[in-house]
Image (cartoon, rainbow, N blue to C red; front, side):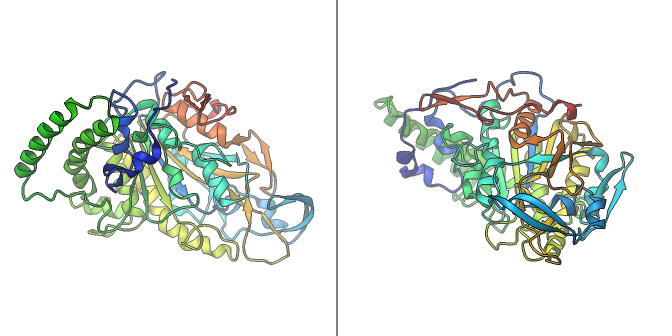
Length: 466
């Protein structure tokens, strides 16, 4: 699947009146890209196992050796020295001191996968999880690794994985964007994580922020639906007359059609965001207080409702950049405790809810972070951990992956990959494969080159496929 880049100016689009609307950050620029509707659903390249993705991203770097990768020898040998040939991106010969994990590990479920007490609720769901303990990234900094986990490029702005999925498959619901991001704070790398970059603008993610007004200006300003309908019909007639003599103006065409998309979202989005009809049991499942429009439980429950209504790729982001309550626990690993408490039950609730509704089979749930944290520190007894991209853990559930499986392993101390390495490019190739897309064929021609999410690398991790 290859397309030529549209000829319009991205800057001129951003200047346009419509693109300035906070309701439709990606959709309104969409119609410049192609004469057909770029969000129209189209078939996958082959039979998909998953129809949609819920991509949960924990910003800042979750410690693998304190969560999903048990290391008995790290408990035993804490305080002992080890030699490493790199420290936070700087080559050399360094002496480091092993640091004991703060949370104990136990086997859970019928599969016996070990998870630490940091995530007791997710631990109850291990029979549905495929835990990858051999993830590897290319960079030790937040910005670059976060960019790589989302865009496949660690150095340059590229389209997000959600944009690639939208470009490859379109949307099942023409009243909604195909890619939605639920985030309370701005993460590392900012809105580049849901940008479409050189892909048609329709495939950019739409940001929904927890709070009293998750999507600005989503409610109609007309007094009644019938009055708004009359206004839209009158405007459509005037627009068509105006367009008749300006057929070659793609900006005008985009502006006109955007009003129809706006009306669709005004009709559907408020209902999706209205949780009042969800039962008390469902609220409890997500650890969500009735009436609340904030918190990670709200994000997870809205993610399920978006998935039910045909949104193709939903990202749920926990934590922001800098000091905005993320997982970057340099000073004290105890900071992981309240962060885990905030997300543990909602994530487990999402998995259980999808499963009881029969949606987990065709919904791929992905949990990841940009990198892990070092199993060692520069001096004995230091309470925190540093960035660690050599190996870390992620997991997937539903959507065609083998449940109750552990794939790959790190070495005895969780310092390096021991076997079955899964690079970020492999991770992306596998997600696309489960959605019925070939990562080598899903390309877009830009500046004389065919680009793809996995650049010139990546292999589908076949042992985890059901």
